[in-house]
Length: 135
Image (cartoon, rainbow, N blue to C red; front, top):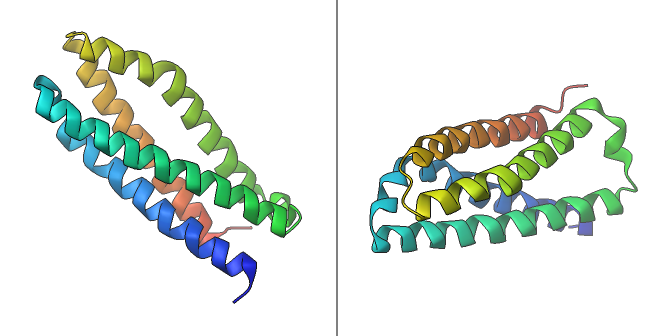
């Protein structure tokens, strides 16, 4: 097994952990109503964040190992751009919404729930592009 295949395996496993942990979050927003529920959501956030970091680093490492060859494909550029856009929105907008929710503003829960659904759909679209690899 080559280094690329090992990193690809790591990338795939952590992509699965990342996306699956995100898929359960929209169904758990009612947990924000109490401290115990908020602790559960924080743990999921840590799992998602950790998996996302490993996923990103493995992806960058694979690009390095193949000397950026995959960047010549439009589907790869679209996938990376969509990933970056989602991360920027999540960092700058969703984090503020989470702070508002933790401060007790109930209206933010719906915005976050819809954002979480959109985010999961975006990552599933990226996953589809990675599997199908259209030219």
